[in-house]
Image (tube, rainbow over all chains, first blue to last red; front, top):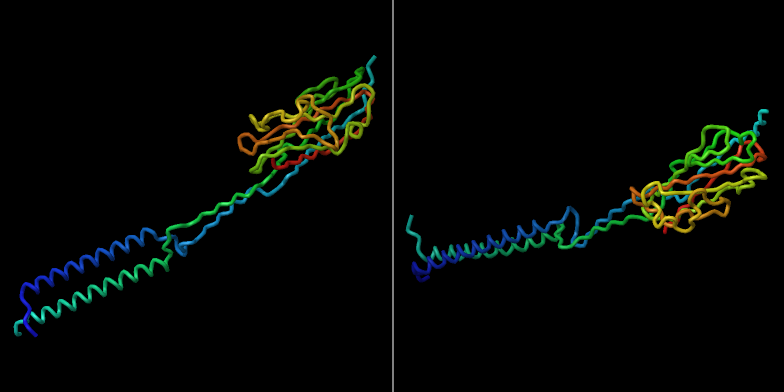
Length: 78
Length: 207
């Protein structure tokens, strides 16, 4: 194998550094994105949360009472 | 140790590049697949359903005029739950009934009685009346009051089994959801004495 020049070795080293740096940045960005979009546990990207608020029990009628105990009219005093 | 040749260095560097590229590729692929499994989502739905409910609450349930008689030498007496007492020989009178809309929908209020005037009082030759009247207990509980029948204000209108609509739109808002309902009686001196009772039924229907 023919010897490679020192200049080639330096270029390869620089290339290695660039590749590693770019790969690391891409991975970090991807993880950050995934973390920021993470939904509540178990929720899929088509999840649905339903909340039912139950009001008072139905009751459409009520009653009232009218009462009077009427006594005989007193006789006039003379 | 012999000095490392440039060729050997080059091979090592190529291996390093391959490792870096393959590592980055597999890492990105794993992150994407992991996002799909753990709930990665861009859209979600929150669905809140509040059921329509009607709930009428009669908070004061009685017009109780107690025990008494038409004053001696008088031909009639008048009793009303707003405090009116005429020619009656007892001091007390009744208080009004109250109804409140505890549901979450505005409602109409209809009232019927079990008896009409004759059935309740039993007759009388001078004056005889058995009436209902009503009013706002909370500010504007009954919207556009009096909604249908101005006669519902004091002294009111004869009550019977057919009944009347006393409010066409009773609000469900907590601060404005209550009305009072009054009872009005005219009794003759010859009305048959005895215990007299009747039941009024209030019916709420969603507007």
